[in-house]
Amino acid sequence: MRYFLLIFVLCAVVVVAVAGKRGSISRRPPIEVFPDMDRQPKLRPQTPNNFFADGKSSRLPIAGTIAWDDHYQDTPLNTGRVSGTTNFVEVLPVEVSSKLLARGQQRFNINCSPCHGAQGEGNGVTKKLGMSVVANLHDKRIVELPDGEIFNTITYGKGLMGSYAANVTVEDRWAIISYLRALQLSRLGSIDDVPDQLRATLKK
Ligand code: HEC
Picture 1 (cartoon, rainbow, N blue to C red):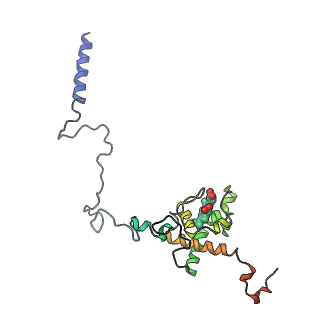
Picture 2: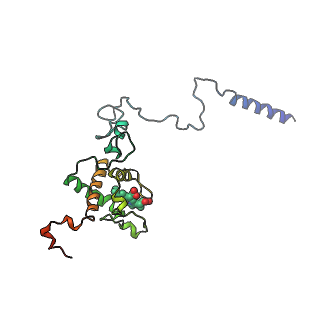
């Protein structure tokens, strides 16, 4: 019984000593069992530091960095939509040139042809590896999509197709779309597109 009392009093003292101080303010540093990364050797932004030649602790954003503000988001070039609405633009908002098409062809072959195939038929190399539902970009439905909707698909992905925003810049997305339209047009020609004097030379 005597030992019990002794231990009981000791426990009470320990509990009061440890828990009783909680919430009170002290100038002395607390005993830290788990420091939880409270203190880290790091540089705060906007403070001087002589590690870099220009004496600043922060680095400037890389050239070409664009502020993510409303203006940036809401232009047809960036969203594929008519400003202030959710409607997709029918026609791409950049000027089409042979340079743009050539760039689009190169980017399409790198980023899209592995799945959609070099001709856009949906029979890229991934088909052999078991990806069987890749869209044929010559489907009437896809030919009829507004340019802005295709931009949206490249940016955010659609269904089983993931986003290519990280791989393809905004300008290159439009270049790819211009090239894709040329690919589609190459399948939509009719005899009427052939000049009269050349028709005879066509193989039947
Ligand atoms: C990893 C494979 C893969 C790559 C790479 C890929 N796609 Fe796709 N894409 C798909 C699949 C799969 C679908 C069908 C998605 C669905 O309907 O679920 C699709 C669908 C589409 C569609 C039809 C969307 C619709 O409205 O139904 C378009 C347009 C398209 N892709 C364009 C592109 C372009 C342009 C690129 C290159 C920037 C690209 N894709 C790269 C797999 C891919």
